Image (cartoon, rainbow, N blue to C red; front, side, top):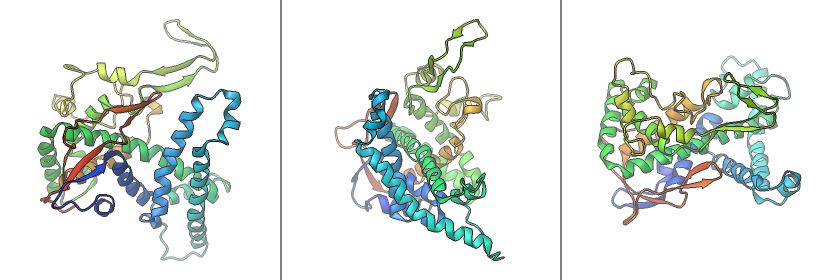
Length: 357
């Protein structure tokens, strides 16, 4: 992460620099995901650019397709620039990944006792392939990019919202820094337990997500047959159903559900019997941004860790503020999706961190 910061944030030791908040966070998250997706490509600029643009291009196609009648969708897709961009992303990714897959398969057959397969997503997908087709490079590439689709932009959206809220509520900055430093000192550096000790940061992230959820609705379903609920209500075949996750999250807390309180859930965890509840990655009937029950997002714990690591590095190493005369950027809505303003700038300046990370 420290190397990624030097690549994506201009030198700002002596002066404030202006950066695009959302774009910079996306690029930092891509660095993180590139490292765990294909270890040998962790600093390959083309691979990182593919992982950055593939989710964006897929979202563009999805949003555009929604306004097109079903009978025109297929033909219309051929005239969408984003559709061709997705195809280029897949082609270029396959060109990069195929030689790596072939080399790893070759090393598996030579029985070299010194060979240790890399511990990354690509190797996991290779090892868990159900059959020969699943293990082909084209299939592996497609799945890696689907993982990027699920990981990069959703994680980046939440992390950007958290960063905007930190700048908008500077009174939380020093308590967060103190907690992070204390956790690092106790563990002698970054350990898995270090992240669990950042309870104030976890609460801040959860409150930010509560007020700026990535989607207004969730649990999109269509009844494939008539369904009778326990109270006798009939859901006819073909009806579409959603759950209003943002209104539920907004109305589930008291007092002042519309007011940002960064340590709201930290204080809830101080109550008897509540210490392991109210966490960012946990789901319940009032917090369904990650789904709920058996349909909960399996990557939510990865997202929580990635956001904590990113935000911790940023606030320990930099000071922030909005440009003169600007306040917290509003959100942009595209159908039910809620995005941080991609045109918003923030100002950053490097600080002397008491912890070298």
